[in-house]
Length: 280
Image (cartoon, rainbow, N blue to C red; front, side):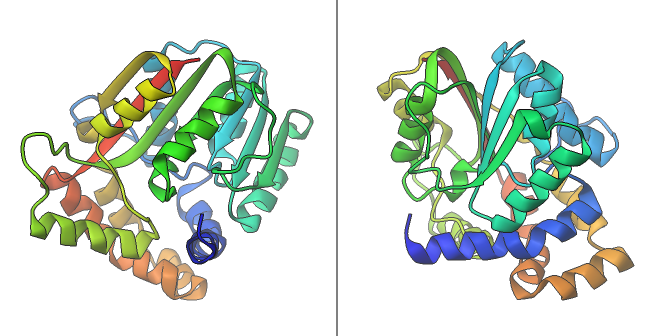
């Protein structure tokens, strides 16, 4: 991972995580609004529902040693550790996030079964075959080398273990390439959210098959999560959120002002929410 990109991602999450927690809580990912996106529900419940739906979809009913790649402030890590009675390790580029996740683990009486580290997902500090569940919820889009990222996830996964990844994608391009306007839309999103690039779900499937993961499953849940962005926009318009934005600095303000880019990306079918799971 390039030093500049590393620093940009770190700064973005160092600056924005406390505001996100204040407004949204511990889960820094999309919510699930039913298969067609029509279910109305509390925004935080929607985020918990996404975790549960991913587990059900992937068939994971138990885990002993979990790795959360791109753990944020420990939302998924601690939820899964508590649910399964498992040990959870989370990695993030943000020292602020790692510190806050550790604090939250202590408050939840889960510090004996959790650990949060500042680490690069392309060079994980773990030996081979360490985890029976590798969980990556909306971190793949930040990776400058998607192949290396999945290779690392595979390397640290135990034989028989499961990899679950949900990530931002662009639409498949097998029948028509991205238009110039679509490419510009993506570039605007990359600039605001410090993404090197995204790829399509079929491209992720191809990478997973080369690892080689077994029993690979893929799904597009774009409709199920698309309402999330309008909910985020609405929540950002409260007085406390606006004050928090100005205190968080320009990168967070820019991200908030550009929420419509993601909403429109889903509306036009350009942005997709892609899922991959498989076993080693």
